[in-house]
Length: 291
Ligand SMILES: [Zn+2]
Image (cartoon, rainbow, N blue to C red; front, top):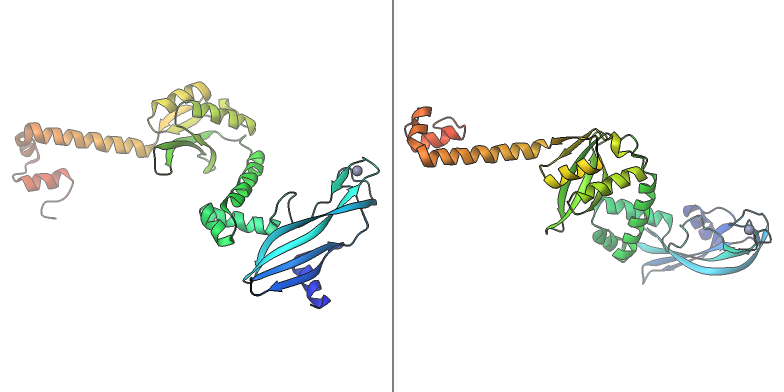
């Protein structure tokens, strides 16, 4: 291929000197495009201590999966220089501008993976990208950790605590939301009082203070009430409206059934209904004759 093609792909890949595309190989049978990227410098600054103009000691061959170019699976390959530093005495590999250290994906390919994982299960995202799901999981964990390390929970005052089951079984996790910011703060396995101790520890680790939590909204679980008492000492408990309404409805229904069973005649007389059908409709709040 002409050097024009290499220059075009150097630009397309966003490479800056001394990095450039030296060779492009298109394999239409394998639907694959391979870019050989080169570092043309003889010297470089030491990545460990920053001393300039250090001799390149040797080069290490590496490959990275990149975003597809049209329908072609794209790969970058490069011999990465290692600098032997006269300043700090260490031999250090230069970072590459297109990938995290140690990653076999370019940053753009990782970004595609993460954005797909926001919409799809990881396995499906991995299928679409034609990579093993565990490789994608590794990235998800890495970036979730990076993002969580930066998470600031100092302003959290009102939390909602609830359990949810995972994998359609009886495996429960506890999730804690910031009710004001409407975002998930914390999740962990289990639904006992210890989960709130774990939340309080995590809150502290992110600049928050369990003592400043004023309000906790929960279902009516005794375990959560106990956990709040132990770990969120100043939080007032309120019960989630959804759970209260569900319980009230169930209680009303139990009373209705009981009354119909034990004193149907008295009920009929009290509501002034004469047939069983009219009575049923009345009790369900429907106007007679609407069935
Ligand atoms: Zn150095």
